[in-house]
Image: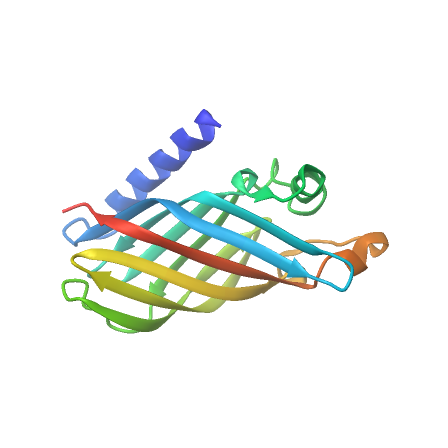
Length: 184
């Protein structure tokens, strides 16, 4: 787990250097990311508070990354099956999103902004262009994001065996939320 944290910190540092050096940057190390799947037979829930994100105000670039193994399920057996059989987290350890906020946001002024973010969602080794709805809230210089969207398992080559097809939904609901701290 310490190795994952070190790699994540290095990634965040590299992203900050790569993204507009002179812009106001925001970072978060505790983005909450959850997933939910519902079928008539079973609901599946998982959550992690260990998502990392970088936001560059001037360019509206945002990068969010999650070490997949940090997702905690209600039942350990579900977690094991998810990591080993479906998402193959040893082979594909991270889920990532890198995109641009489509609408202007004044990060210096308090307000609520309904936004979409267009970019690339990388899950299970498959990159997929997505436009994701969300909300940006600025309060006293603190930036908060929230989003809810669906991901089709088939879009990321996540195979669901016919034996358990009735237990796992074709679409997984993803929720993300968190606060950013300014680096300036």
